[in-house]
Image (cartoon, rainbow, N blue to C red):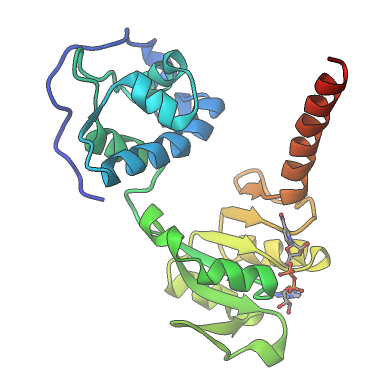
Length: 236
Ligand SMILES: NC(=O)c1ccc[n+]([C@@H]2O[C@H](COP(=O)([O-])OP(=O)(O)OC[C@H]3O[C@@H](n4cnc5c(N)ncnc54)[C@H](O)[C@@H]3O)[C@@H](O)[C@H]2O)c1
């Protein structure tokens, strides 16, 4: 992503929020969770050649209301330009910088089975600032297997791989029973960010960030909403 020099024009659309609510650590978690959604919407606008966007247009592309969008973006110090809207490219840069995507994050995937293989083949991470630089599996018969440009390494190689390749994020896609041991190895090797797909609650030191991905929970939430829709129809 190019690094624009600054926003077009001046003239704030919305009032600034309190200074103490700004900055990386001052942004509410709910806002941080929406930033990737705004980034995706802005990327879609940029791909269509759109250079400026009103808050309504951007909010509708992101699926939120425009007051919430303006409030969220005000945490980044971005207020748009009255009568013009937001500079799409500059806002993309601001959001990417805020969520740390202007630098290349290097990722290792541990457990190259069905899921690990699918993740390793997905090409969409690179354009979002994540580069899968190493694959590791606990099965010795898998070590040395080629996956595109990468070769599966052994679990014992993890500390060297993490140091030499400057890896900062570990993705765990092993069976649940192996996940804690893998997390311990990652932490011992200095990794402080883990994305866990295994159905295991990991125990890690306080300075280690763990995000858990659980598709069944997402499906259960959909099922809940689906059930409510059905109930509403039958009550009519
Ligand atoms: N979160 C989700 O939504 C979601 C969705 C699908 C699967 N999963 C989970 O993802 C994990 C992987 O699923 P899968 O279908 O790819 O399984 P899989 O059996 O195909 O692959 C697991 C891989 O992990 C490797 N492994 C086992 N122990 C290891 C260890 N100690 N160190 C390193 N590698 C080790 C195995 O050799 C194998 O290659 C499972 O825990 C599954 O429950 C989660």
